[in-house]
Length: 375
Ligand SMILES: Nc1ncnc2c1ncn2[C@@H]1O[C@H](COP(=O)(O)OP(=O)(O)OP(=O)(O)O)[C@@H](O)[C@H]1O
Figure 1 (cartoon, rainbow, N blue to C red):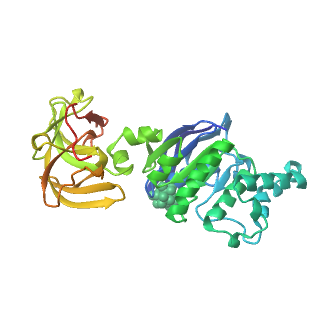
Figure 2 (figure 1 turned 180 degrees about the vertical axis):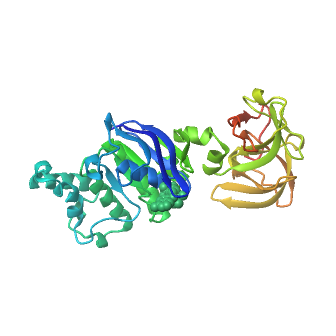
Figure 3 (figure 1 turned 180 degrees about the horizontal axis):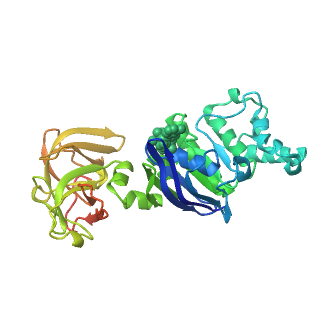
C-alpha cells in the first residue's frame, strides 16, 4: 500500500515535533526515517500508526484518508525498540495474537491461523521455536518474533521504531541484513526509524533525514551520501571534515591559505567574499605536492585493519582534519610531527553564515592532474 503524508504538524507546548511534513512512500518501499534525538521520527511514526493525533495535516493510505481512523481501523503493523511480546504466551501464540483478537466476522478459522503462524515462523527462521516462551529467546530472536507478529495481520504498512536499538552491535548488523532480505521476500511497505546513519544507508531504498520536525532531505542512500542537500546532512551522514574559509569569486579559499578550490555551480556567488565552510570526507582528502594543498602537521596516525587514519593540524583551522587511506604494502605513511600538504578531491561548500536566502550547497571537484599520493 502506498502512503502519503500531507502537511502534518504536531506541537507540544514549547516545541514543534512535526512542522508541515510532506512525504510520499510508494507501495513496497523500505524507507528509513533518520535524524538525531528529538528530530520528530517517533512522533511521525506514531501519527501514521494512529497512536497519536496530529494538530493538522493528513495521512493517506492509498486513496483512503486515514487521518481520523483508529489504530485498529488502520491495520498497521508496529514494532518497538523494547520487546513488546506477551510473556505468558508462547512464540506461536504471540504471532497468532493479532488474528485471534479480530472480531468473529473477520477472524480466520483455527486451522488458517495455525497455517499462517507456521508460515511466518518459517519466514523468520524460527520454525522450531513456536512452543518456547519469550524469556527463552535471545534479544534478536524476540525482535524477529515481534516482526512476525506485526506481519501476521497483513498490515497496510509496517512501522518499525528502532527495532534493533536495544541489541548489541554485531546482532544489529546481522538483523538489519536479515530484515532487508525479509523485505525483499514480503514486499511490505515499511517505515523504519533509526538514529544510526549506517543502518539507514545500508537498509533503506530511500532515506528521509529529519531535523527539528522538518524534512531536510529525501533521497536514495547514494544521493544522501554523495550529494547532501545541506551542511546538516553532510555532517550527520558519515564522517566529515569541516574547513573554514570564504568564497572568492567562484572558488573556495581556506582561512590562512592560498589554494583556490573551484566550486561547481559557483557562478551565482562570483565576487562574493562571504564566509564559507568546505566539507570533505576523510577518504576524499589526499596528500599532494607541497604547493598544491593546505600545509598540515601530522598529529597522530591510527591503524584500523587495512585503513590508516591521519589526524592533521591544519594551519589557521580551528579543528583537526582526518585523512583516510588504504595501508597497502608500498604506501608511505607520514610520521607523526611531519608537515605534509593535503587537498580535497571531492567536497561541498556551504555558506557558513546562516541566512534565510542561503544558496544551496555547491559541490566541487579538484581539477584533473593533481596526483593523490599515499593511497
Ligand atoms: N509527550 C511529549 N510531550 C512534550 N514534548 C514531547 C513529547 N513527545 C515528544 N516531545 C518532543 O517532541 C520532539 C520530537 O520528539 P520525538 O520523540 O518524535 O523525536 P525522535 O526523533 O523520535 O527522538 P528519539 O530518537 O530520541 O526517540 C522532541 O523535542 C521531544 O522532546
